[in-house]
Length: 61
Image 1 (cartoon, one colour):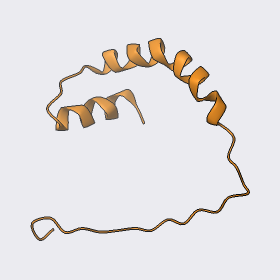
Image 2: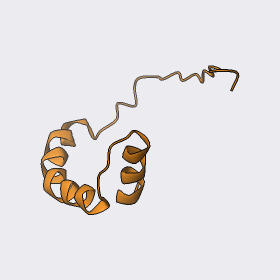
Image 3: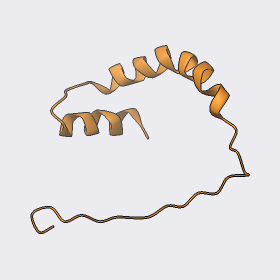
């Protein structure tokens, strides 16, 4: 996902953020996030997962 995509997604929700701001946030906060998420990088292959898709109509769509 690019910084432009994130900026567009926020704009759809009424939040105006320039893509250069998103990039600066990424540069600033990614090292600390990487350290915090390092403990969760390994997936336990002994467990099983079940996923299901659910569709909900809103106003007929």
